[in-house]
Length: 440
Image (tube, rainbow, N blue to C red; front, side, top):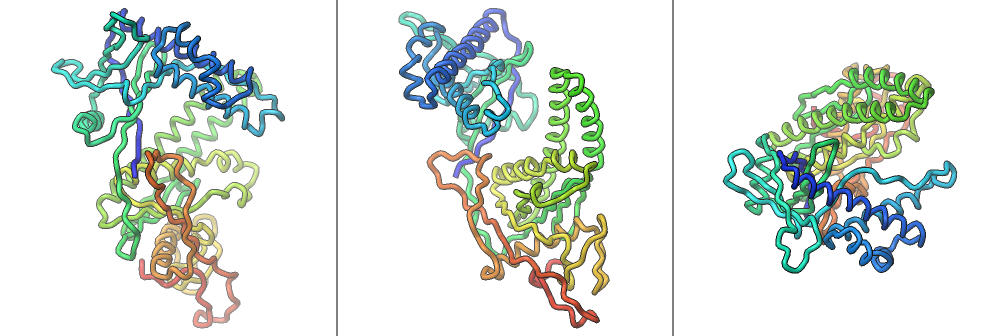
């Protein structure tokens, strides 16, 4: 199986001639995409074959672009039109067809090349076609330097040159006055079959604690206080801007909020992977929170924090980084994970973030209890497969496959506990829920 990731590089200093050639490619590529989008709208088609017949030869001659750029422009126009056409809110809210503004051109792995040179300032260059080839013309390929100052960027470039990683497509992007090259790299990975020898790392995701990671019995709390405070401030600012209809400033605030949350999730996921690599046979166990917003009720003051909770992004970030390091990731049923006592297995309601068992007296943070029970639920599914249901999870949006079978992720669902039994003393309490797997 192959997994891919995108590495971003900034383009170094360029002369006016090269800048003009890059602007020519970017502007004409955007115009070609708009032409294909117009044809798709007029003919109401999402077929690449029909779009190719309708406008390929005219667009190639009109904008003097190589075939690879025109093909990618056609594909981009088809994707935009199909996404707009299938939008279920389009008719109700009268959503118009989006206007393309971003200057971005994609090159496939055949046209795009990465070159190592003896240049001391810019040792690495990328080259790609920028104009349509003509007879007797040899300068239709452009060479631009890329900046790779960090060690991890150099490691990826060295892996591409040494064939350790597989070269994918590359995007040329312009933001403001700067140019960037986004290179897709891939590698073959092997995810081993899970068994009882694996050591689970339980991760409980929440709002007050973004993640509680239990690694070999040692919990790590990632507080969500700063994120909640930032979201409240951004929420008030966005409310004021919406009333004033300041759409441009509103987009800037939304982007700042998104970048802040992305950075926090990146830090958490990187820490999880670093700790997982220290464990022998690690497996990361997460909760399946697919319908958490539909199945939970919150107060009016908590709605914004609950609806903007980026748990899926955090889980996906952990997942793709884990797969890159060949660490398996599974999702388990999230019901009762913070209500089952990990010692006597009785069910108790928590009080805010405090959990205290009314039978054996065990007490701890409720999120920490959940991380323990997540680990135990995985061990139970491995040790007692008759009590769990194994099925393929549909979570392959971050993985790219090249004619390889999709990995079978386990969605481990253990039968949830029944309501707490009425009992006079501790000895008469019926054991419910998770099996008594030794994990404490």
